[in-house]
Image (cartoon, rainbow, N blue to C red; front, side):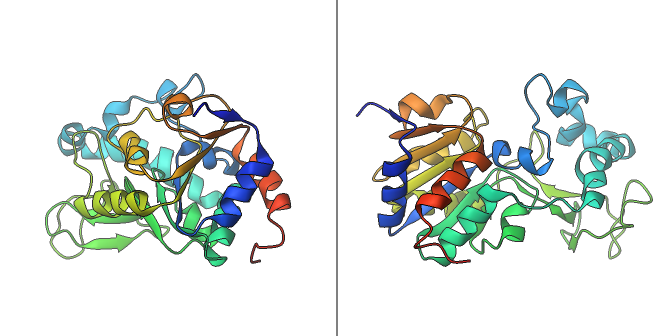
Length: 252
């Protein structure tokens, strides 16, 4: 079937009728909450060297890596970033019993802040740190990064963010949960991802039995290969338009 463009009425009808909808989200859903993307002319990698997230470089130069990591991922937390209309719509759809889970490539925790409960953080989270030796985990709190690099309170080992670095594998449990959600889905809602990052980009293709609604400002690798309906718009604008059409079934 050819991809249908900008059909909000059909998209809303599919959402309302879904029994096992799943959302797959990327950086584009959070950019309107003030979190910059990595790629593109204004992305973080235009200003920072991505080697700071290479696992080998991190072990060899932990203080240098942590200094940049703190600036990129933790200084913004002081601004109390909030979920936007797109995060909130998915949370409300979960409360309505329509969305059964969110698989996100993001590490910002905004889906949870919006109220989503079943969130698979495919790449891990910046909200937690982990000791590279004893594997003790710490919830991030202000002051933890005053001294760099941070060291484990239990064993003195080097602590890193609990998200996936270059050269590091995806957590097998996160991979399994993501695949299972998509395989069982009858509707997949793709929001804010171009499908460029492997292996996350392959997860939507596990949704073989699902109809697919994609929300992106520009076409992605999914638009022709996977999407049935493509809503070419920013995530918040599309979410507000869908919310208006779904008003009768959404839970506040």
